[in-house]
Length: 139
Image (cartoon, rainbow, N blue to C red; front, side, top):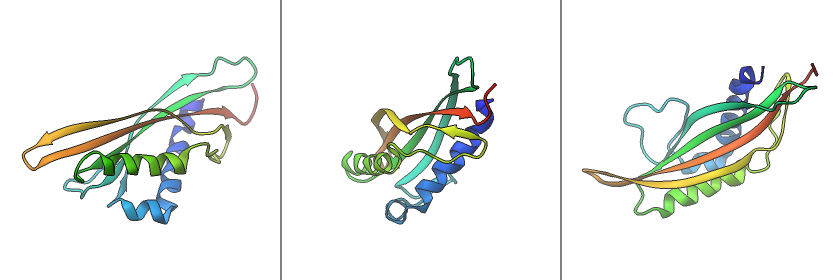
């Protein structure tokens, strides 16, 4: 059941992002659940979905996960630079997940959205990644 390995993938991604001192220094925090009043810029885990691989000899699927970069820096540039740093750290990384085999992490989509507030603009970067995951023991 690949869905059961999603938490392990999230833990591996979170650990990789948090362990990188240069990246961590650029964010006020890297969160699964963003605390109220969190200072920007910060990185937040988003939604995760699984689609079955449809293979006959091994159970597995493709996990798609989203990361959000929040920035209130002047303009979109800070948000885009932070998104690039996250992508560079995760791109082509093959996470080690107990009990299964994971392929390389691949960026599939990215976007920046401006949100207006009474304090000015802030920007939300959305990075969508996918990674194939297969159970270690064939069917």
